[in-house]
Image (tube, rainbow, N blue to C red; front, side, top):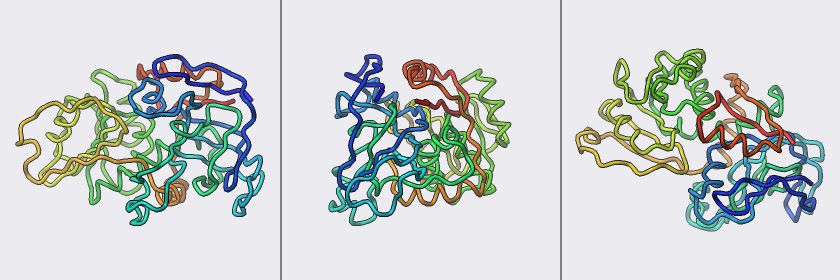
Length: 327
């Protein structure tokens, strides 16, 4: 099969021919129809995340049809449309897994990081960590739900209770979580790169009540903020924008260093917390909620061979919504 392979961090992906993978016990093989391009893929490619498998096939927002079943798989049928997310495996025995926090597992496996992912014509995954994709969205439109949607949903839950929400970095995750927040009756304020008029117009079109540059003060103090941009200096800016008792959620897997800041920004029982990975229950809950909103993803499809182009555009911020690779 054809696949885009990352040999070492900082080098372009290579289009290669690799053997068709075979599913082992408990696994399924999926013929990939679409794979979203996530900022985490960029962090893997650029070497920001440590301890990846090399070489690796990136990609963890995978939608496709089940092509082959491994031994012991009974709850999935050949031809089913499924999604393969970032969380590809957990140990099931560490204290975090036993206590319902499998997103913090001590011995996890992540798709497109330690487990070959969806920048390919086929992917193999643990059937217990795959999810049926609801009818409605096409394959390309559904792909960003598998990470941008899931991590946005988990981030939003961390802000509860919330009536006014700021979102810093208006990309794939933000454009999905803004729709969910509006569905819940939350006022959304969008913070973008300074002077990024198109992103601000996009945010307003999705129902945001205000959109401005990341260094601007919102028209009123916010209950909470979510930072999706991997930019540490946004943390003190977001803290200055939330009221006493408010929460700032860091929604990315990697961020540049957070600068020193006066304690006054944190005082007043403000909270700064990160979001790490996701649980299978997050996926079940969000994929049930998305059709009720309904979430409409804004996507641009590119052929698999253009994976490097997609990563470069994501690196530059040259997109609106989400990019999706199609084999």
